[in-house]
Amino acid sequence: MRAALLLTVLVGLADAGRSLPAAMVYDSNYGAVTLYADGAHVHGTYPCCGSGTVDGTVTGATIHYRWQSGSGNGGGVWTIDRTTGHLDGTWGWNGSETDGGRWDLVPQKPSAQIAN
Image 1 (spheres, rainbow, N blue to C red):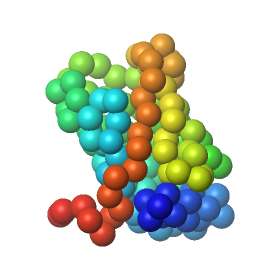
Image 2 (cartoon, rainbow, N blue to C red):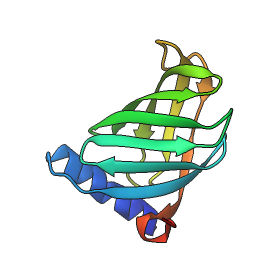
Image 3 (spheres, rainbow, N blue to C red):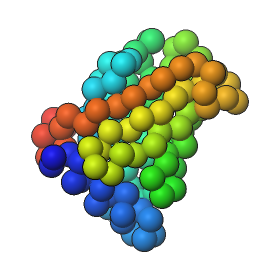
Image 4 (cartoon, helix red, strand yellow):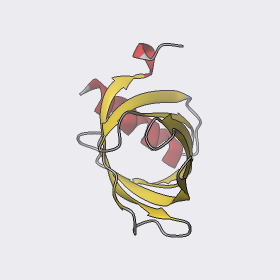
């Protein structure tokens, strides 16, 4: 519940044009994902497929992102579930946001619990 609340506050502030640095660790169907957000900008890392990075933008309840790893690059989109804090979405190769399949994230640890 704490994770969902943090994400809801973060998205609300991004919608209002305010900036609030925050971080969240998620479980996903491709391993752990750590996302950092500063206002409407989101970036992060994940260990899958030779390790990778994510860089995107929050607009309303949607995050459009680009990913890059040892296996390639592409785009994706997550929809933020404001009740649970889950990021439900897809990823794609190269210019697509969908042709790779599902990539769903479940919040695990808010920023205060992430080791530096």
